[in-house]
Amino acid sequence: MKCKKLISAFFLLFSVHFFGQVYSDKIVGEKNQELKDSLKVADYPYALPIWGDKVAKKGYKLPYSAGLSLNYFWQDSEIVISNLQVGFNNGPMYNLDEIVRFDKSSVEAGALTIRPDIWLLPFLNIYGIFGKSNPSTKINAGIYIPDADNNWSEIANFSTKASFSATTFGFGMTPTIGIGGGWLALDMNMAWTDVSALDKPAFSYVFGPRLGKTFKLPKPEQNIAVWVGGFRVHISGNTNGNINLSDVIDLSTAQAKVDNGLEKVSENQGKVDSWWSALTPAEQKSPANIAKHNTANRALESAGNFLSTLDGALSTASSSSVQYSLQKRPKDMWNFIIGSQYQLNKHIMFRVEAGFLGTRTQALGGIQYRFGL
Image 1: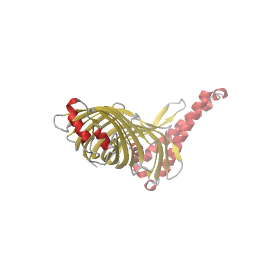
Image 2: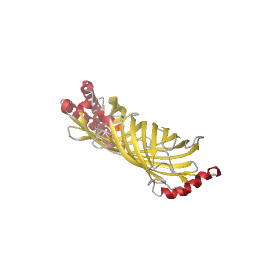
Image 3: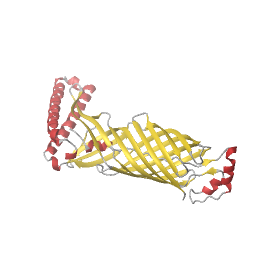
Image 4: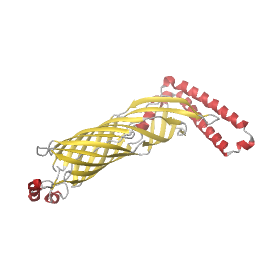
């Protein structure tokens, strides 16, 4: 069977990453004494952040309190799923976790996002997330059944790539500490991705700690910041959906693959029954033989029921539907990130970031405009 939207929907979740690197910078050093003194006597002209005037008078140089960022984010990540259940035409759901095996299935996604933000407090930035994305999935999987010797063999396989359109919305916050050009930021955000193949928007949570330093350039207000850190992704464990059968399988080859699968199930069931009948009563009481017999019967029954129900659904494929449920997680929750930002002036910043190591690779590029509120 060649799955498209159904199995692809299992893997379309991705985590969009947002972070704007500006912070409250404490002015230190003798060469900056004049600037520090001017901050202490000047009136802070904006309503945000809260306590902004008090912090400025203590010698901190605050960024503009509001900003708008445009980011492009790309990510390729391996996903692991479990507790896979599939049904047809709102009938019984079949648990396929034991007989379906996935091989390096991954989701690739590109997202264009808009991120408005404000500094609520001198050390706390909060922001919104609005984006459009085009995730695509690469799926390699097969259905496996055992024989009398508990050797598992593949009776059907599928490999496919499918693309989707999705909308993301969410919010986040970034507590920061800035001291003399160095800073620590703990970015975290929650987002919901709305895709037509899912019953409800899919939830994701991202935590990204960063440690970095800013280097001033000769021109006033210009600097370059560099950082290293981590990127941790958590996605909601449960996914449910309902789609048309004609969107799930290749109807030109499905019937032949189902017929071949049912034949192999029947053949292996005969081998298991013959093996069990040939055992002596004492051998049939052996815990090892009982476990092997029960495992084989359970897997063969699961594969047979699923293929038989699918066989019936194929007779009315144009009007049949598929229901599915599963639990999912990233193969690796953490990966390593490095990044840099060039500040042209206090209004305009350009940022790039890359993530790697583990089973997730990502890249981000963006531009930010800041202004006072």
